[in-house]
Image 1 (cartoon, rainbow, N blue to C red):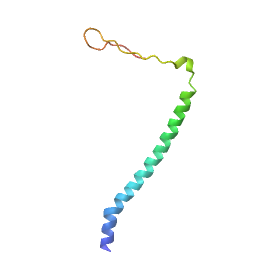
Image 2: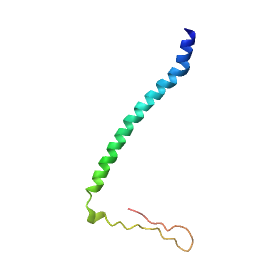
Image 3: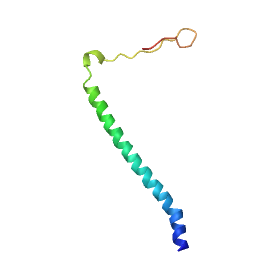
Image 4: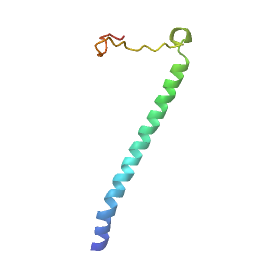
Amino acid sequence: MSEFLEVVGNVGFPIAVSVYLLIRVENKLGELTAAIGELREAIILLPHEKYWPATPTMPSFPSSGQPAKQEYL
């Protein structure tokens, strides 16, 4: 009987913690997948004229070698 309790103490606790964490991660993964799907749909529905084509802006560097102080909106 003492060997059984020792095995449960040494192996049972890590198994229980692993199962608990796997269940939590699975739930969070499902929530994240749903959020990504909603974001994808929102991006598809954005008005294309206003946001595309995007023009990247690059900060300019003066002769001092330091980045120019610009405020980005």
